Length: 125
Ligand code: FES
Image (cartoon, rainbow, N blue to C red):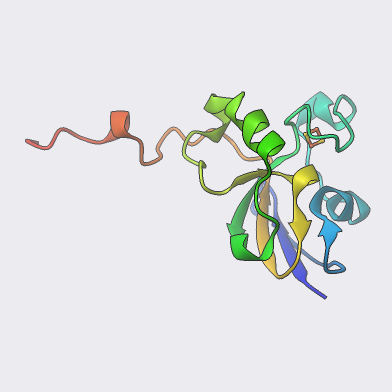
């Protein structure tokens, strides 16, 4: 069975074994992993992929989860500030199928120090 390591915003780790082919959001909630910030815990779309509040970062094992679907791409594109600095690792937990080991960071914050063109220093300095 695949192992999913959840890392929360306080850098605490929780390792969970999940059945192959299971949904990441469902397994996180079963293991009492907090996915939602604030009131989003109650005010979310319950896994329909509409609200975007279940966003997580797949820190390791992106090859072991399902590829991003069209609706997930559209949903993430609708919240561009949330994905800054995490363009290649942000996913919606409710849209992710776990097929192998992975490490997941929950409740990501905006990465204002990421590798973005507007943050790179001038070449002459
Ligand atoms: S729970 Fe709403 S997008 Fe995942």
